[in-house]
Length: 228
Image (cartoon, rainbow, N blue to C red; front, side, top):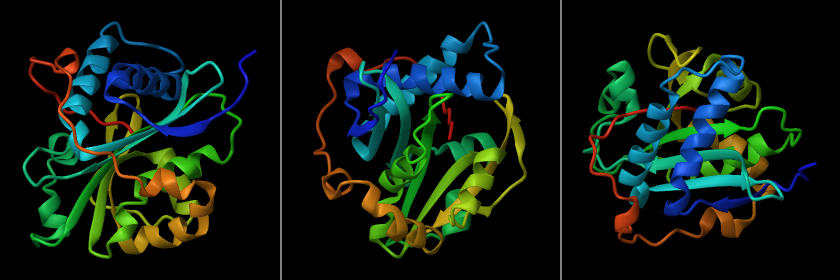
C-alpha cells in the first residue's frame, strides 16, 4: 500500500518528463475511462518540449506520495508577450484583446493541473491552486488565462474563484474544455482564505533563472498542449 504524503515541492527541470507522463495519463483516466489512444506518447513528448522551453519563466508545483511518485501538479507561467500561449493556439484568442496592451500588465497562464484519480486528500486541490495563483495575487494589475475542463470550472466557481468564460467550449482530449480569464479580483478572496494551507516559503521563494542542461533541451519542433 502506498502511504499518502502529498507534501508540495517545486519540480526540477530534470523531472519534466515525469510531469508530462503524469498529466497525460491522469487526463485519460479521468475523462476517457482509461482508454488511451495509441499515440498518447506524442502528447507526453509535446508537453515535455513546451515545459522545457518555458521553464525559466514558470513555476511547477507537485505533490508526491511516500514512494516519490507525483500525485498532483500545477504550473504557472508568466507570459513574455512573445511566445504563443495555449489560449491562442487552441482557441485563437489573443490575450491582449482580453487583458489590454498595458506595459504594466502582468499576464500569466495556469496549466498542467492534474490530481491522481482516487486521491483522498481533499485539501490538495486548494493547496495546488494557492501555489499557482500566489504570484498573480501579488499585483492588482495581474490576469491569468487557462483552458478549463467544464467539471473543474464548476468546482472553481463553487470555491469562490471568479473565472470569466471568454470563448466557446470545444471537445478537447475527451472532455468539454472552456477558455477562461482569471483576474486578480477573482482570485484574491480565495487566496486570502486558503493561503494558510501552504507554507510562506513555498509561495514566496522564487526560483533563480538558470541555463538548462543540454540533456533536457529538445531540438524538435515545439507544440502547444494544455491541460488544467
